[in-house]
Length: 344
Image (cartoon, rainbow, N blue to C red; front, side):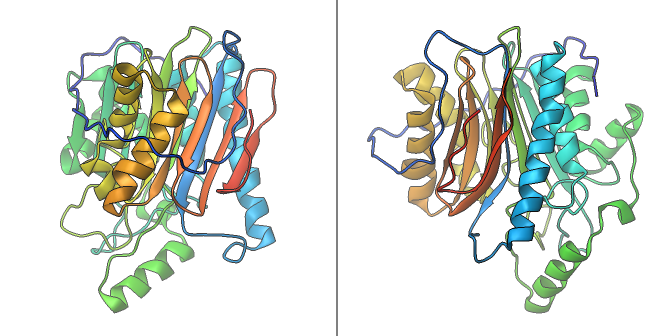
């Protein structure tokens, strides 16, 4: 899958809050490349973070997630290996995950309190910090591609609701009827929430970060949001600086978790700022933001990051996060639980 990407326009920068006190935290292992040996390209993904473990996921379910994550990595890797841009790889990879009902983005997305699917997505490229986002999108198969078109085909950054749908239609985005998104799993979860009249979390947001052969970064995030979400609720996934960030000077970030807390601490941008202004390495910056900023307030979730040297990084404060990494010349490496080792 390839996408033609004309030059876009400038973006709205989002401020960060930097925390001063470093603390040590247990981190899932990732084996980085050696300094000065940047790979030709590098790709990493997440499929949501949450409170799941081996008792919550059967062996069959675990195998299904591992297969799905590996396939998504192979899809994006093929784009990069053919000389495609980081942005093209992010869109191609997330599109695969939006079609996979194992996750909460596109097909299989959760229901709102009104019993409909409202989809959010954002994307950002590191070379010029151009970006695009949509929220409350209905009736379109690939929200990440609509977000990409906002970035490349408009002078704006963010479209919502009816306006997002109008823009998608004008751009010729692929439509999908309500039946495409429905799954029994999402319907059952909605009915339980409806009976209790309470919002339920669904950590199935998907995201991708990439470094291409030209040394450019990109990040994207896509989600159906929170089960039984009400009143036009918007989480962090479509918000540049909270759920998504990319800057060639530092890193690319995609987040997943309790969106309100990621917004309150500007997680994606905060990691970038710790690197740019504090001289931190990506892993240290990510761990401090997830644990000492967002986590300290009571939020939970995680991020996948990519340094401008092609080093993938994961950080989470939950027992599990579906994730994986792949570099040029390598094979997909995936993990489900916080204790899993992922190495590109």
